[in-house]
Length: 583
Image 1 (tube, rainbow, N blue to C red):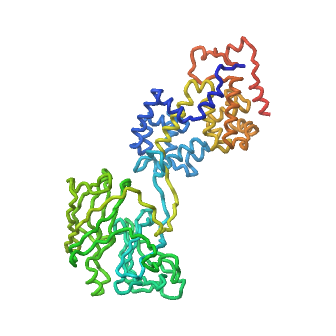
Image 2: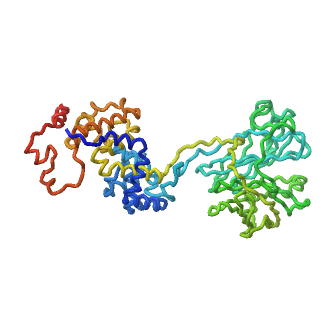
Image 3: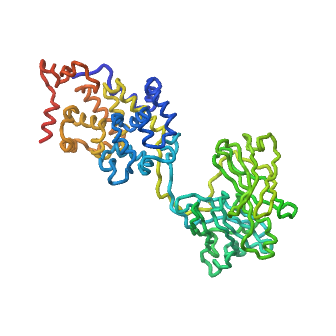
């Protein structure tokens, strides 16, 4: 019996309180670990293929170590197969091997496996947030709207809904919003159109007329472009406006905008009076200046948030010739203009503005660059410190327009999520990347657990067992992980050095009798099992797995099976317990 002066159980319990901190501190003090982590964090964002990772030995060591596969660093062919084969395929190495460690590794790099070993972007994701590289959605077939429009107490009012993401058949996202314009002569009648809220013309031109009852419920709906009646019969009939979404390949997709039912108080309604709360409009409209159809103005608007990235803002579609088009009953070929604001990817405080046709006509427009200060107010225009923004000049169908821009602003708070429009698209699949932070954390733990001190007393294996065992539900998972297996072998009463000489089937048969997974479910149960392992190591120490010296080569170690054992009795019962377990 060999009892050490410092209890491994005490060391284990101390480290268990915060292994992340202990591992991080170790990594800072161990030069090799510190350098490996720093190099990996720098190079990982540029690694976009299995070949690139395999050629970067230092990064590969970190990645393999994080997955408990440090001993596979030179097994290049095996690692390449795991990285370049789809792990969900029944013929992949990861799947056919039934090795839980290999499968976890291959699944983490699934984006490479599903694309023959590479991807357009890196598989490594910075930060500690979501690791989703791509998400696939079912194509949108319906969008439901729920809103309260202004009351009939006035006329000529407008409402622009928030935008909702609609997905095409290749999971491309398109933002759809609805514009409502109240009739000047009948306050219960509204002109409605859906548009691409990013100004990319993905929504085909459309126009509808929707009327309400005096109680604010839906009364009828007509397709203005075709003249077709959509709903006008008995109460309860659904009101669904048909629109067409065009993807990047110009493939058309039918989407219905559900407004509710005739006579129903849910869905889209009008406020009963001017005091009733209404849905806030989300976008401003351009305006004619002095009744001119070519001189326009954009009112001041909040176009985004200071904290956002990749933001865009577009004014609602505006027909500068609305009056004449209505007088002449023009239904096709109308001109619509919007001002689009797009945030710079390289400098989030800078936005560019230009004129677009949200329904697809070619527009030649000048561009204005506007920079904002920390309060969200205009600071610079075209690189100069001024608040004066020059008008945008745009030519559409041979007609030149001038659009004056009133200074916009940015909100100091994030935009609240909208609930007016809801898409029926669902997530169909998600491809995750690998968190750089998680790789580093796991690698640091692996290095900490495998340092000489924690290897000699078994604390490293005990810590590894504790953090891994919670997700283990089968003996095959244990058998595929050498560290887990060593702990289980020891607690089961077997000497790992001799137990490993048995065939796989023999090992499985013997451990099946010993391992009770019902007693390894809770953290307390797993911790007690790890403590039992450490206690048994104190009673019957196991030789550390270190490089052999000259005496070891001739069997000169002091283990029970070494040549020195010839000079003493072997009182170990491990071998006899193994043989007895075979029969």
